[in-house]
Each structure stands twice: as structure tokens, then as C-alpha cells.
Length: 151
Image: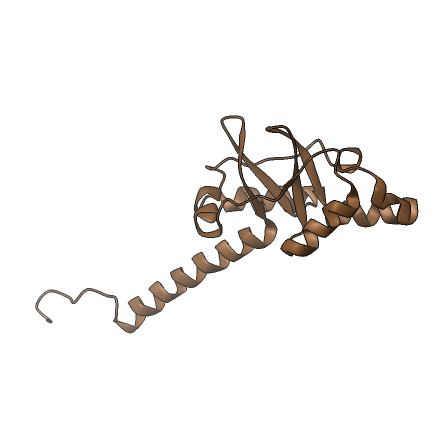
């Protein structure tokens, strides 16, 4: 299964903010949408990603004053991205090894989606359940073709 398949089921809606938006505004958006990260766009250009973890670290370092800092000041700019052809195994390996939970999906230099580790795990479980169901049907004879002369 590929990232394209995951996005087909999940959708391609991406929560975005501008670099000059305050962390307070970003936190409100994260809360309202019940999500863990936003993509930071400078105009139409992908600039970085900002997660709830980034906000917590800023609060620990700066106290309540952190809420006046901007998304651009705290966003991660060195971001590992996926392509539509990236397999879920490649995506989950990258997220696990890099210790991050959200991966922007870029195609031909433009942002086309965002997948989370939860999206990737869900896709993997669905695929395994389908495989188990197929094997179960085969073993019980429900899905096995009849042998010649026995039908």
C-alpha cells in the first residue's frame, strides 16, 4: 500500500498556518480540529511543520510568553517528506527512525497531503485484516475454487 492509497481513504485536507501566526492561534486551530500538527506555508510555498510537541517545548522554555511567538520562529524547517508512491513500510520506518509523527506528502514540488503515524498504522492493520480474512476463507473452503470433478 502506498501513501496515495492512504490519502485516498483519509482525504487531502491539510491544516495550514502562516509563519507570522502566533502559537496561541496555532494552538486554537489544533484544538478546534483535534489534530497534532499544522503545515506552515509562506504564500503557497511549503515552509515547515509545527506540532503540538513544539508548542509544549516552547511553553517549557519560555512560559506563557511562548504563546506570542510565531509559527515561523518555532517550526521545523528540515522536514522529511513522502511522495505519493512512498510505501507505508517506508513511511512508518522514516517516522519511527526520525521520531516524528506527521509527514507532509509532496508531489512535483507541491504539498498534496499529510499523513500521520496513526494513518499509516491504520492502513497496515486494514491490509493485514483483509489478508487474514482471505486466508481464513481459503482454509475453510469458502473462497477456494472447487477441485475439478468434485463440483
